[in-house]
Length: 112
Image (tube, rainbow, N blue to C red; front, side, top):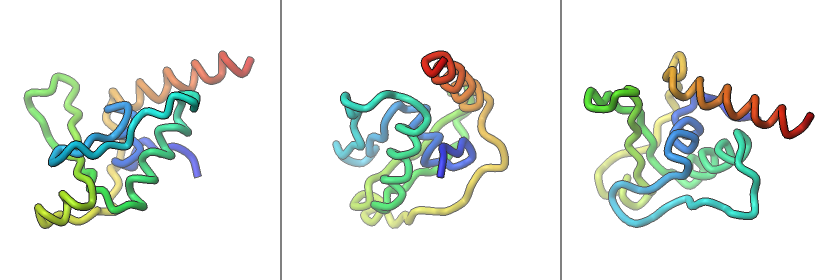
């Protein structure tokens, strides 16, 4: 499976560059030996999903790009009574689509 900009786990990993729990110091951190690209962010997002992290899109009127994600590790999700959701958005936020396009162009340039 490939990066899905409609999956909030993939999109949050891409937008935030990694996933940091907002309830404690837990993180899915940068892996310096791996090349950055859509596959990298997809792997982080899907690993977080498999480990029961909670990732939810949020409306954030204070964010000029209109993109915000609530990210909680499984322990904090349990502590706050939140469970992972499988819901996908209908269309990615415009900034996510722009970042995806730029990364695809960069990956194509490296491959050429």
